[in-house]
Image 1 (cartoon, rainbow, N blue to C red):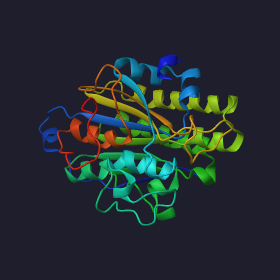
Image 2: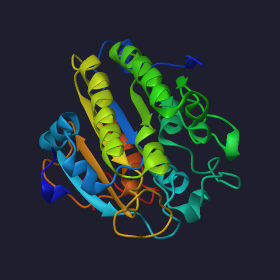
Image 3: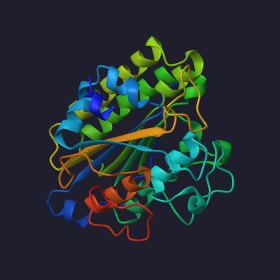
Length: 292
């Protein structure tokens, strides 16, 4: 439990691009894994048994914050801000339909990393993150994409399928930057509210994070970020600014990550990924952790 003070089958698409020159020469290359866990209330996280998120926080930091007020408290705007480091007025996503986005101008951090020769990985179960549905995809061209349709399979099953693939793929050390999405907590809250089944879904997500971290434990220089997009109202649901729906949080650890609570927001995650690889993020709205 976190301290109360911090309140079908998988479709795998591979398009192997260039590899970083320093990897070819045998030098160590850092790794970043961002876990996006959808719809986890801050108070439920504090009540849940989440040893893997706790360990990330204890080795680095845990900070909570309010979702930016420039868009409704919905997954589309929040995840797009996480991915691009930009606010909705820039990236153009104001709801769960992505039509009208400006991702060609403000691409996701995996696309930016791949353009610099890094190998990227995405494990996704919500269609607009990975496909053209609803105006997507948010993550447009990862080196490897693992996608399972959460609506068709059920989000719990889909999450486990892509987490299994993430553990196998990331455990090889062959990918530099990764985003792993876990959607079941949000779907459970929408379906049955924020009671015991929801708490259990949060605990399953923590175990799935642990599965990937165990598979990558032998790698050096790994930065781990765990983030939620929003919370839920009592009984489930979000989109407004009630206390528990507007709260979000980030836990992170790794080389260069602050080891105490620090002011952060969704827009800081993409700049942090860029900073790990020494890439410029000066044009992003967010800043790397600890620089706010």
